[in-house]
Amino acid sequence: MGSVPRMIRLALLLIVLAGPLWAMGPWKSDCVDLTPCDIGDRSYHVREPDGWDGESPLPVLLHFHGWQRQGTLIVRHQRISGATRRRGVLLVAPNGENRTWDFWDKDTDDVDFARAVLEEVKARYPVDESRVYVSGYSWGSNMAWRFVCEDGADITALLAISGTLRQNEDCATAPAEVRQVYGLNDQVLDFPYGPSGETTYPVKLWRDKFECGVGQATGPWQQVSFLTLERTVWEDCARGRVSLDIHPGGHFIPHGWIARQLDELLGRKLSYP
Image 1 (tube, helix red, strand yellow):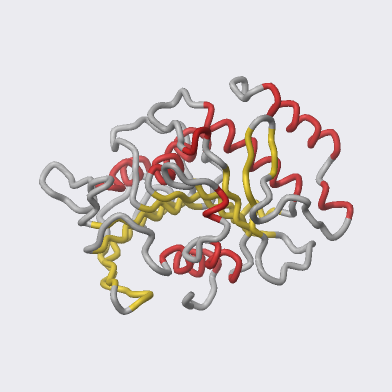
Image 2: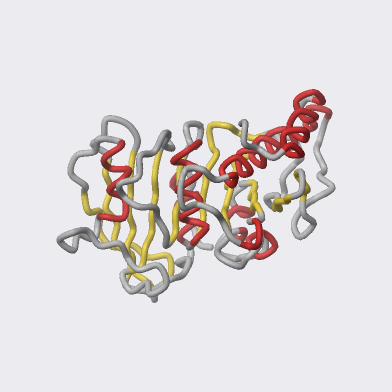
């Protein structure tokens, strides 16, 4: 992690030397919800799940906010934290520098920053490392793609909303699973149709990397009555799994989409919210 700022490297070193704080007994953090956790000269937010006992291992959702937002919005967002806190998932929301993310190419300190946040969270909480999910919305979705593209070998699933990278990117790593949602009428980050108008193009990069065969349409589904999504799943892959949900709407986080993904990934009965 040679490009990690010096203060973040120091913070990580101190954590390693101290050992996991949660091992001392039931954990109570001094920085939760709207109070940021400082790491070097940057910060992030956490939202613990409802009723957590302070000891049980926690699945984690690391979520990158959209342009000109901050983690304070994420930990109070009903379509994000409303889903995680009801499902026993620890929500982690890094704060982008100048309220944005640098995801344009491989040479970005934001990947190292996000990794430093994730490793500090693992030292502060008993994280279930078999259930570490990375998510993002809009430019935050682009950043989530960049993170798993460069440092995602230990990530269980990417949950990406209305944003991708160029489909010809050469990714060094990949998560175990990719789940993408996109609106066909997105006028902020236009829906990335394929060369012949294919609507499966938003996940071409991952289908190629996983060496997937033909996708299977699984039909329409709804979390709310006013929005219908159509899902295509690629499970015939040399490794991994890819799914793409499309809907007729625009640039937004669909109601219940994150909740549905977490229910499926955690093996829970589907519910809303």
